[in-house]
Length: 262
Image (tube, rainbow, N blue to C red; front, side, top):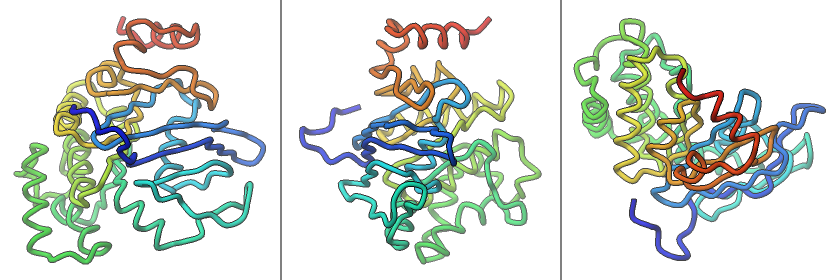
């Protein structure tokens, strides 16, 4: 990756983010900055707050305190604490449009073909020209290796193929950043590698990505920066060679030891 110029505006900036569900505080003051072209992986045990952080970033969940900025523009809020919500619906739509999310469970529409799934959001949300969207969608399906599946339905595909279709759908929105929430955890090892190859190729293209993953090898291979979350806090962060090669905290050492292949 080419280093961003000094003073480059982050695509995503999160400052002092807190998130709670009733009395349970899941995020306890998190700072994350993703510069253009940067790949950031979020790792940690189940319940550490990784997926919640990603969903707060994309405004799928309301946070109770802290700032979220998209390309320097702060999210506007009304209310406070558990009653804090985004104040501007149009701003929320615009931010979500530019932060495409890929979910663990694919979330494809079962009644639509793969091509229709990929085209739907640009047509209905962005109101783009159908011929242009279809051409882009077919190109993206070729890019992720399932161009021959354009006219089949999700149920007729393997999990790995469905996840690659979900990635093509996210890319078709031409987002400023991609958010991946455990994109390979529902797949068996062989199908997982199909998706890993696509994610690595996207990283090599210089796309801005936030990646929640249980796959330490993937995090090490594609990331510019890795964040280890523990109990709602950033326990340790840094470049992958440091985090995986010379971890400082006892908790991270324990976590990495437990995730090493047998």
